[in-house]
Length: 419
Ligand SMILES: [Zn+2]
Image (tube, rainbow, N blue to C red; front, side, top):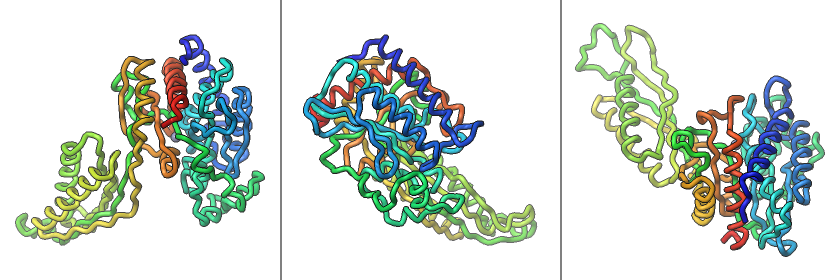
């Protein structure tokens, strides 16, 4: 089943117009800010629910405020292929991050509905209420609602005005005591697909509209410290110094070179550095710095991290300093399912001649969903890779290709039961 080019163009134009319409649903008239459990969240849900209904779906809002639509398969009650992304935004956001995935998903169902096609699987579309974590500082509340992974403590989290999640839920007519009702049975859902803007420059550099995601990067963050000895910048000879900043500098250069050498998909960043005592005439005695490393697979990531830390120790030892590190954040890499990658890849090849596979450097709802169901992701080119910014931009022609590829993959997967 294929959407023709004219249908795809019309669908893409409708997606772009709907992105504009949703961008107007904001807490501020000057920019797009739409946070979880706000009046704007409910308005966006109502609007998206209306579009879902027009596409032939049964529509409901679940117990954590996700907007959901279901298009039955050949047999009522069949497991669903779930398509989705999020409808919340960061502050002063772009209009495509999240929304593009929900609106293109609706177009795939709209086409099936207009062509009176039913598939062996049901198709469900979901607009998650919170992915960004803008309001409460905790993320993926929408997708963790359907996986049933809300820790009990979450309802007590306050926003910037000291309104807790539980109170905010009550304010919009939801019940914090009923959150468990949002959880879906494992057997309800065969697989999850998410279309999203790339948020990086790889597709643009490859001059391609679409690419298939291999994995969502895992990350480790550490606080590190070189401790040497502060001393008089005029009297301590060069051979007697324990200069913490010189050691840190040597290590930072090593981090850059070693990461490049080890694997082009790994990235490492020293983003902060503070030097004490911090005076022009004192040899730096102590330097604190952060280290952030990310990659699409945990094993190479661990290997890189351990080689970087070993070298930090070695540099300190050779210079007569000490080196300390403490990891304060880690998230595992999320692999995309290989059968879903294949189906998306062949759909992308069909519409654009070739495909590109790439990891996602940013987090997505698929991270939470992958704890329960197989996930696959399709990326759409985004001008200069800029996102979380009003300058976020996609081209209508790319969206037309995206809708065609998305529908193609959905039909293929639903025909074979998404296995
Ligand atoms: Zn997003």
